[in-house]
Length: 241
Ligand code: GLP
Image 1 (tube, rainbow, N blue to C red):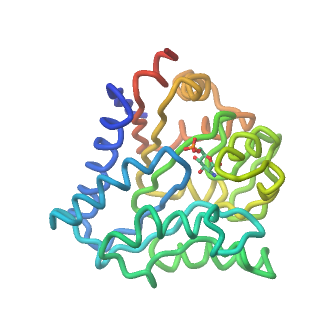
Image 2: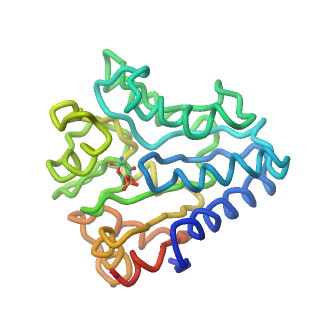
């Protein structure tokens, strides 16, 4: 795993955007794996700017998001569907038909998950996956557990994640307790991965990525066996102060 330590959040976001921009330049029809949460917002802002300045072109890009709350309406401003439109898709020249977020409105979650993996495979697999990390080491919504699931699946959120994500909702009781998420296998199939980590509160999780151990109690540690991962972090996350 290659580690890039940045001065602060802005620098981290720029570094991340540079890698995404190179990917799109080298392969204009790239398949991007996209993440939500507060972490990638700065990276998305940089991509919007680069697109405005005609430095990158999203017209042939396809995207697959990692996860979505379940159940949730796509109109709910806390849905990841809404988030992606609001923070990226509405502001760049991507064809919305080429963007995919697991459908939190589905009546048949199992079917939705199976189809999601099939769609990714059919598109040719993810070229570059962008990841954030939960304070408890989760990636997408793969929460710490004895067993982790390979493909896209329905999962229950841990109390830690519900509490961490409640900051975006009016009240903690509004946070959905389930989600649809790509599995560890779906993520590991990506050809390249960048994981962004900022802030002191992610220091403990980041440290676990830098030691030699792999454990399903910290799902992100599985990334250590992937051949092409770049960890981009700020000093606060790296040094814990
Ligand atoms: C959520 C998402 C993850 C994200 C994580 C961290 O639960 N499912 O994909 O990486 O939280 O979020 P934040 O970037 O807001 O800290």
